[in-house]
Image (cartoon, rainbow, N blue to C red; front, side, top):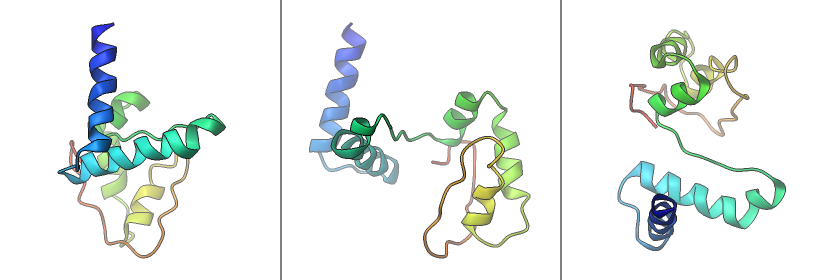
Length: 106
C-alpha cells in the first residue's frame, strides 16, 4: 500500500513541479492527457524507454533497436514503421530526422 501511495504522490508532484528532462516533460504531458481526455475513453498513454518497451513487449531490446536502425529510410517515421510488427503504427507529424536509438532512449 505504501508504494502505491508514494507512486501517486510522485506523479502528482511531476505535474505540479516543472519537469527538468525531456522524459519528465513527456511523462507529465501523458499524465495530464490521461486525466483530461484519454482515461474517460478507456485509453491510457504511457512513456517507456527502449528497455521498458522491449520488456513490455517481451522481446530483446536489441531486436527493437536493430529493426529501427536497419531501415534505409532517412527519417523517424520510417524507423518507427519498422516496429509495426510489435506495436500499432505511430503517426509522425512533420519531417523528423533519423532517431539515435540506444538502450535507454525514450
